[in-house]
Length: 411
Image (cartoon, rainbow, N blue to C red; front, side):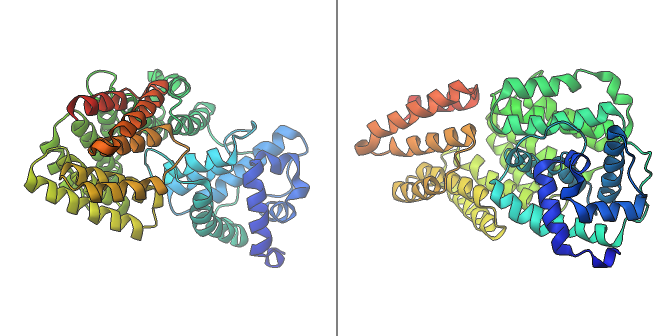
């Protein structure tokens, strides 16, 4: 009986299945006795042939995921359990980062152990266990499939592209995205196809932004605006507001600082956005104003960044908090407060991330910029900037290369 199956036993099997991928339930069902018993209670015994069992388990898992309360959680589970394909799954840590980017859209994923603790153990696993123990509202059809192959393949490629963009492996990401964005025939695949196209455009925008392709055709701004049009068509206010925030980032990067600061300020109080996105907007108010060396603007910039940093700490976002501290150091430098700039950049360095070349370059660029302010550390600052420029060039981070060159000219 299902009542004899404990949550603890299901937790162990879910973690094992997540590491191996959903296909392992078909290939080695003896490793999952409790899950196997539950599925047979809902859908009867699985077919004997291998392909039939794969379809059986995929359909049953899809029915379980359909009971989750949030579409993002369903997509997160599909990524973590590698449920849409029977192929060998990517490394679990890579899937964790991709899933985290889906659940909290951002330029990078948090550390895998943080994702495991928060997104998996605190959020996803309890919901899955609840559905498994009580049974799905609509039992699975043993003959069902997981959907058309194009959409499945597209979603799978998009997950992989998230990982490659996070590593700044732009050639590999470009191949995965262009495979789908270059196919207008998929526009007729309904809301699901439009949703995938919008998400692909967002990721293409992130990639182009990191490459320094900010405005014009085939730019980050162009991709973001196309994604916003699709989210508007789909009637998704939160996604629309998130995309407006990204478009404002491209305006700031293009030098429209006052206009960007005003838009960030409005989005910081926009009810369509979640707490983290509103905090990003407030942080970027300070970033935009700190680039304009006017005393009244700089005091507002420092206050906005300090407020955002405190909020990120309250939201338990250590990586985001570290980036805010880095930006605070630069704001203090712009205001002429070298001591505070040094103190904050040392704090950011103590919490630096090492898995993202882009974040490494940004932090080293900020560090070098601050070191140049003191004649005693100027030579060291030049060496730090040299290293950052080499890494930026190696990964095609053209915007960062230009920023470093600008620092050298103006300091």
